[in-house]
Image (cartoon, rainbow, N blue to C red; front, side, top):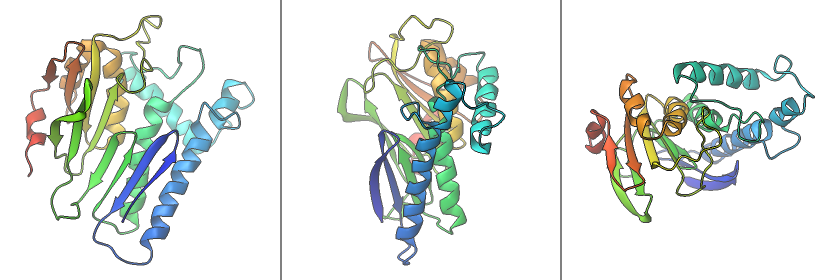
Length: 251
């Protein structure tokens, strides 16, 4: 069973394999409802969201929901672990935790599916993926990395197993990631960075600051235990971390 809905300003796709029980549609509906809740809570485009209420000074972080407090704590942790290259204050000077919320939400959705007893599924939101088990053919899930200069072309096919994959780039949404240390400057030396991590939350929270570092970002990913990365620069030259090739094998 597979379904895609537009939530959080992006297509979100769920696929469950090998389970024909009547509860699958309801469980998938619950997952989409969860993403709708995340959007209502964290969106910087909805005036009623907790994030926008905090930005307007109507709600303190201390008085916000447990999920919002968790995201702020995780954001601060990521900022410290990335030497300040992760920062939820955007160019407009408002708090925008979207660089960590998406992966966090995908991971949580996958955990909900596992708790419901599903073994074979994937959850994708805006190109970030958490897979588990096998696909409809009984084989490992595969993830394609697009050529940012020709999006109809796949330059790499990955087999991440039960790990998470997150990609940041400027080739679809333009300049939406910024170096917090040089906020006025666009990032132009790289166009795409894909990270494979222990889960999609971990991959997503590090791919954002790594991209903000420009070409140095792939070196940062190299230093992280349990992470691999694949970068494409503005000259269409690819650089990968030392252990990345293991994910190109259909194990």
